[in-house]
Every structure is written in C-alpha cells, then in structure tokens.
Amino acid sequence: MVLNALLPKPLPADALVVGQLLTDPLHPERDSFYPDKAHAEVDDLNDFHIQFRYKDLFSVDAEGRFMTNYGARFDLGRMYRQPNLLTVQAEQMIQRTSQRPSKAFQAVCNDPEARTWMVEQIKAGQPLYIVLGVTELKNATFKRAKLHDAGASNRINETPLEKDAKVPKPLRGRSESTLGGLGIEPSISGVFGMDIRRVTARVTTPEEPHELGDLGYRWYYYDVPGSNKEQLIVGLGEQLKANDLRLMLDLTEEDVQGNLDAISKLSLDALSATASPMLKPSSPALRGRSPSPHPAMLRS
Image (cartoon, rainbow, N blue to C red; front, top):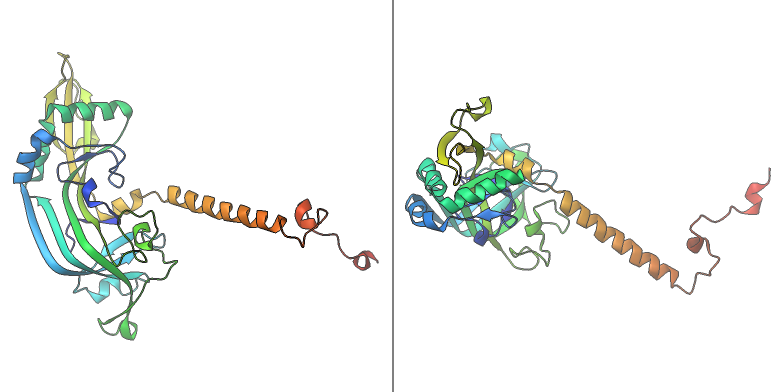
C-alpha cells in the first residue's frame, strides 16, 4: 500500500528524489534544486521497501484526479459509495522514505548552495517544499473497478478504461505522455506517492520574534553571507496529505488546451464546409446568419 501521500497524478520517476527542494510539488520540472553535497548524508537516512506484484485500489474524483488508495485488502465501508474506482496492478513498488526527516532536511539546509537557492526563491515570492519520500510503481496497469453484487461482497468486476474516462492525463494514452499510457503501451511507470513537506524560510534579524504561524515547524538558523545583522531562518512543516496535493493540481492549463483543440477542430470543420460545392456565396452558412423564414410564414 502506498504509505506516502497519493499524488493526484503520476509524475516521471527521474524528476524526483529524496532531499530535493521544489517550488511546486506537482511540477518538479519548473524549478527545483538538489544539493549534491548533501547527497550521501541524505541517502544514508533513507529506508527502502520493495514489493513485487503490487496491487491497490484507487478512487478518482470528478475532475480525474487520484483521491485515495485503499490497498489490495480494502475496507468495504471506506469506499462503498465511491463511483469512480480503478484497480492497480504493478510489477514492482519501490518506496524510499527518510527515517529521520528533520536530520535529512538539516543536511540539505547545511549546503550553502541550497541556502542561496532558497533566498532567491524568497525574493521571488515562491513557495518552498522538500521531498522526503517517494513511492514509485513499475509497469502499472489500470482498469475500471465496480463492486460485485452491489457491494454485498468485496469482489470487484474489472473492465478496460473508456476512451473518455475521467482519469489522470498520463493514463489516457495520449501521444505526448512521457509515462506511457493505456492505448499506447500496456503499462506506465512513475511516482504515484510522495512525502512532501512545506518549507518556510525568511530573512530576518536575531531580534525579530517568530510569527504565530511558525508554530508546528522545526526551525534552523543560518548567517546570511555579507551581512552582520541578517539571518536566514528555515522551518520544516508537516507532511502534506493526499487531499492537499489534489487541491493543488490546477487543471486549468489542461482544460484550456482541450478548449483550444476543440476550437481548432471547429475551425477546420467550418473551412471544410465553406469549400463544399453545395454552398453558394449567398448561402446563409457563409453570411453568418440564419436563413429567412419562408414567405408563407410571414403572412398573418
């Protein structure tokens, strides 16, 4: 079972590593930093768990984002009313988690280059996060799942996913998918779970008191190069939950692209229609208005 928080969509396995700093947990390609100097220390703190022939049951929300994973031996009461369920089977599940998250975080912060990167993000007004665990599935396949006997038992009926299924984009089999996808390849591989934690960092002075929102963070303090008065304070927050990550996934970009594709198709259809020999230049379809009513309809 995925112990790290389930991601709303799978991410490429080569884009995430324990100890990595991010500005957006669901878009590691946008801006991130991995401290090479802390690699050995962070890696020594990692715990590895490998499971072959991994099975799970995922629920998906109305927008096509993963919500919850119930495990192979699911509790019927937890998912009885979930309308959108997927069975998951993977050749292998690999989970990497830090046994001592605070120590791993401190090792990252001790790297001067990491602190420089964080200060740059502070000035840019960017949020900060750190990866302290990843769950990777190898060659995972997905099928539509429905409870057998209307939920009277734990048996499940499986069927292939529909072409227009509301599921994360990499599962739809689109040609631009970097994770494979149903319809192109029989399975996909990627990161499906993550221990991601919010990082709070500020440049302050030693005399400046902490804020009320600083409660619940583990704090570390560093001198700012070239300044005798300022200090960099860095705090490690709690692990984000699956629902937190799901709400962070912005589907706007994908929806906009889908609308653009639809508009493009309509434009091509319109061009095809205007080229039709059945239409004359004076046809209403070319004038952009509806045809006039029949004269008989105008008589009183």
